[in-house]
Structures are given as C-alpha cells and as structure tokens.
Image 1: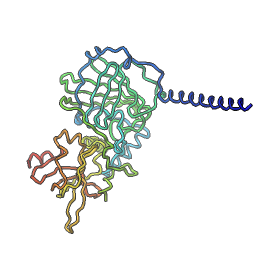
Image 2: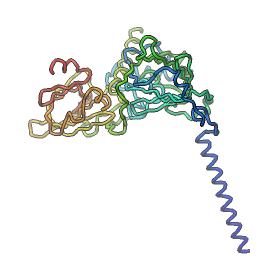
Image 3: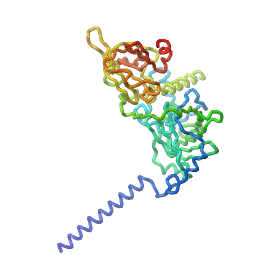
Image 4: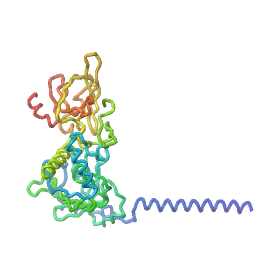
Length: 269
Length: 134
C-alpha cells in the first residue's frame, strides 16, 4: 500500500514535470516565433557569386544634411495636435527640446538609424544586407532572399522593424514594417504609429559613385494624410572604419519630467 | 499663416540640423546666442562617448574655485577632427569659449579652447577663429 502511494506521488511529480516542460517548449517557441524554416540567407548551400553583380556600397557613408529634400508631411489626428503643441513651444522658447528617445541614449530605430549624423555601413552577404549605424552601434537586417514579409499582427514591434529588400537594377528597394510606435519619423516632433510602412530606394548616383541616394516614402494612415517622401544624400569615405560608440559609457545627462535635458548633476545650478 | 508655417518649418529644420553634431540630444539647453570665456585649470578629462567632457576649475577672487563643465561632441567626431585624448591634461591652464547652459549652470557647449602655449582648438562652428589665431 505504501509502495502504491509512493508510486502515485512519483507519477504525479513526473506528470507535473512533463506539463512544465511542455509549457516551456510552447512558450519558447512562441517567443522565438520561428517555424523551423531555413531561408536562403542562412542555408547550408551558398553561392557568393551573386554578390559580384551588385553595386559597390562599401566604405562609410556620411549624411549630407544640406541635401535633404522631399515634400512636407500632411499630419492628421493626434500627430498634428502634438506637432502644433511642439511648434508653439519652440516658437516662444528657443531652449525647448522636443522629447525624443535618443535624448536618453536609447537607439533611434527605423528610420532615423539611416540618417543619424554619423556613418552607415552596408554589408552584403548572400540573401541579406546588414546596415550598421556608427552611433550607438545600431544594426538592422534587410532580407533579400525572397522570404515573405510577415503580417503586421504577427510581428513583435521593435526598434528596427522587419525589412525585406530586393534589387531593381542597381537600386535596392526595401519595405519595412513592425517598428514600435513613438520613434522619430522624418524630423523631430513627428513619430510613427503601429501602422507605419517605410519604403526605401537606395542607389549610387549615376554620375558620382561616391554619392549615395536614399529616398524614403512613409505611409502611416494614423499619422499622415498622404504618403510623405523624403530624399537624402550621403558621401562616401573610404579612409575611415567605423569607431566605437557606446552611449551608456558616459551619459551624464538626466531628463526632467518634461523630457528636457538637464546639465550634469555635479555642475547643475 | 504661410509665414507662421515657414517659421515652424525653419525651426524644425534648425532643430534637425542642430542634431548634426551632438546627436544624442539637441542644442536646446545651451544659449547659442551667447559665448562665455573663462580661464581655469583642467581638473578632469573624460574622453568618452556620447560626449567628451573637460572639467575646469576656475579660480575665484576669494581663493576658492568653481568647477565648469565643457561639453564637446562625441569622441568619434572629435577623433575624426584630429583631436586626441592627450590634448588636455590634468593641471593644464586653458581658456575656453562656450555657449553657456541656458539655466545658468557653470558650463556649456565647447566653442574653442586656447592652450597655455597659445594654440587654439575649435569646434566646427568656430573654424574661422582657429584660422585667424593659429
């Protein structure tokens, strides 16, 4: 009888352990959101030959701030109301700072990762392009191996979103969705919603191969009444490599409750 | 209305441009319209990202000193402009020009520095000062 009771206990413990293990497996699977598919970018069979036909994007690309073009955004709803509040404050207070995540050393995410005032570097590997922003050493991945772009509601919104690209001749065309709401969209004071779609066209200048063009189209039905187009130009530098930039190394500024940067505590009045 | 929109756009553009050097926060906390000069002794050198800092002890008439903080851009940008970590050493006597903090705190954004040997080092916006003095 005692033996049966002990066996029963042991079986119960085993049963509970099995449930826990199964649950853990289910949770892990859903967090990783992977279905086991091996896409061409990571496949065992690989050919680097495809890279030979691509344009030369090597070197560091520095944004040319005086060559930013495009049209004006037509804001709607909360985005318009927020912009009007910021614009009114800026008009009366030159020391007003638009609250932004980067003021606190957070990464910029997409799309500001691309034209932050440091360099970007493109790494081409078969089926994938990796973009490194020097500032805060941010990394984004653009899948060019034909994998499908997930539905918006299947993505866990994050800083850089999910980017799928393809080549149209010598132009890299990239679609990005899944960026988390509240990141800078195009200029300080405008931020995206969860419905943002970014289309990028990235290409070398036909006459000057040391110039790179990045054309953006933002579509965000909660923020913009119509697509917003912006153009950027970058100049190539082949002499430098990217330098280390750890923002938390010595970020001496705190933000006040209004999102304004304060002088360091040790010298603050 | 058009004028207001142009003004707003201009402000937004200034704001966007102002990120060009400091990057992780804007220039808004500095009074860019004013430059303040002071001479002191280097008390601390922080050759770091996201900003390089030089803490300077500025002697007062009563024999005490007030510590000023000079905020530069990142060491990434400074390295590319030819600055090096050994440019300022502890105990060096240096004269600085800065855009002061708008709230009156002792410190500001680096504009130029004159080392004790007379050499000037300049921020991008003060390039003409260096061209004239050096």
